[in-house]
Length: 318
Image (cartoon, rainbow, N blue to C red):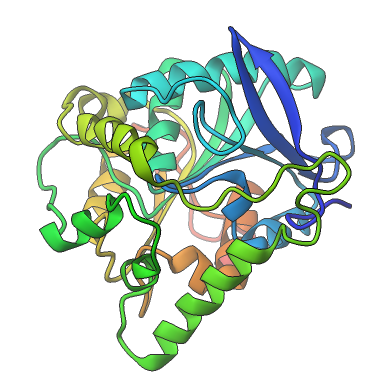
């Protein structure tokens, strides 16, 4: 079974753009669930996914799709100027890919900016989306949201590659937290080194910087200023898991909670002693919760206006 460290880099053309992607884990034909599409954060590429998250998810028997946004990492094309543009490109990519996998649907895990893209995908192509996991992310412009500190945004959008990402993903509550952040950064940036540049594999593309990051910033900030996606969240009738660290400095924990509250079929799980990188800090537990959610073991209402099922009907949970 392929892993984050060994998966082959594949390419497909969709509406004039050549996209890089990987299929990791079991094939869809051998799985009981749709493939899980992984949408990463603003500075990431398919090379920088945490192998502990990827490989723990594939261990549940799922096939994962990792993918570089247009103009990022190993994909060609231009970076879209808006999250809506990211979703348009993603829909084109899925329209080509999914028939080859003999499926019409995907589950989606969106982290940070990937969560913005996942929300827009669910609004624009609801028939493609089965379930959603939204981690370290929030809605677009709307009521009750908090802005992050200016110093944090400056670090996120700093066009120079440096290690400050550790401090904003893993707030330095203690030396243990810092050590966990450094361990995450090391495994995420070195996972592909054993295969990079060999047998047709590209060299590792690390965190986005320079002019590409400036263009990404435009899409990110356009989302923050757009009230339309927020106003439509209650139309998304998808089982959703929203996760957050209890002290997220990038997308404030409050904003993740607001997102869960606006989605009619959402569970909200907060991870203690963690921040934006909670899914990496608690990789084993995070992936366990995600797997159980995708398997239908977390409570969800039968409809947004329906009654809550009787106590004791959620299997192992009560």
